[in-house]
Image (cartoon, rainbow, N blue to C red; front, side, top):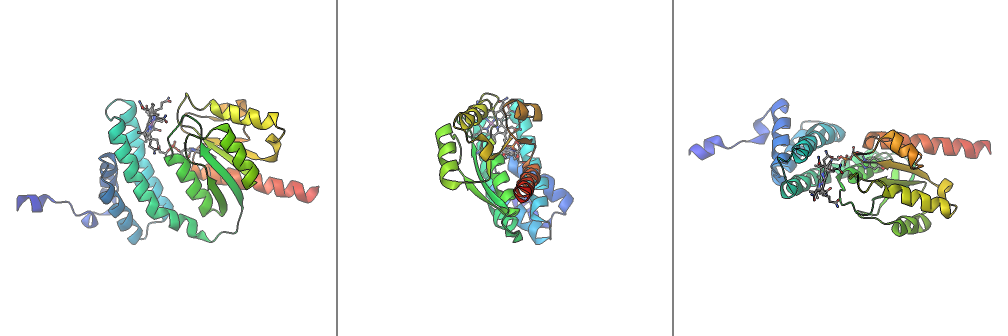
Amino acid sequence: MAEDDDELILADLPDEELVPQMHDDLYDGLRDEVVEGVEILLARGWEPYRVLTEALVAGMTIVGKDFRDGILFVPEVLLAANAMKAGMGLLKPLLAETGAPKMGKMVIGTVKGDIHDIGKNLVSMMMEGAGFEVVDLGINTDVDRYLGALETEQPDILGMSALLTTTMPYMKIVIDTMAERGIRDDYIVLVGGAPLNEEFGRAIGADAYCRDAAVAVETAKAFIARRHNQAVVA
Ligand code: B1M
């Protein structure tokens, strides 16, 4: 009886309690509860992007801090990541549903040696939502796979993601190889990931560093518009 009394009904919580509760559930890797929370917020009229940023990404930031500080370890973070992915799965079709006209095409992948894919998946989702066609190469992507995809897919944009200080230099290997083959300037190269910054993006010869998924979309749109304008002038 006492147990029943203690049971938390997510749907009974007002937004300002539900969101922190979702952060806790994400932290504890409670997939079903995170999914339920997403469903409740959507049913209450929250925009999918708001659910994504305020309920999921903000929750993952807390997980990241405790991972850094040695409070959480890989198995717990994996559970949290899976809960986050389940929540994102619900939002993906909604974010892609904007009916925006096709803006261009992007090939994206997490670089070799790196298996972090949540940020990349978020960028893919947001780009699709903004009307881009996205070809996702997944994780641990080596230079041959990137270049092979550029040849077969003929995208406008190459996107690369790295979450480790040890894997971010691999982006330069990809860009240098593109330059060696004389194809660097055929593509807009955008890079992102938590340890990167603008200076790094410039130093490796990328066109731009994107702080987050929303910036990636804006940057991609701006570069595509610039390309179209150049084509019109020429
Ligand atoms: Co890892 N991990 N991890 N991890 N992990 C970090 C990155 C770390 C910062 C944690 C920490 O110490 N605080 C740390 C890196 C330290 C460093 O290099 N300086 C770290 C480490 C050390 C490791 C391992 C080495 C741990 C170990 O095994 N001892 C190991 C590495 C494995 C490998 O890759 N070879 C490892 C493993 C893992 C898990 C598997 C447990 C899991 C990944 C699950 C998965 O992705 N499927 C995991 C996670 C979840 C994290 C943290 C906690 C969260 C990352 C994340 O998903 N963030 C992370 C801590 C942190 O970043 N605070 C950490 C949420 C996501 C929405 O943000 O990915 O930054 P983010 O993406 C953003 C932007 O960066 C940007 O837009 C996104 C959306 O807004 N963006 C782009 C990203 N990519 C872009 C590409 C673009 C544009 C924008 O292209 C155009």
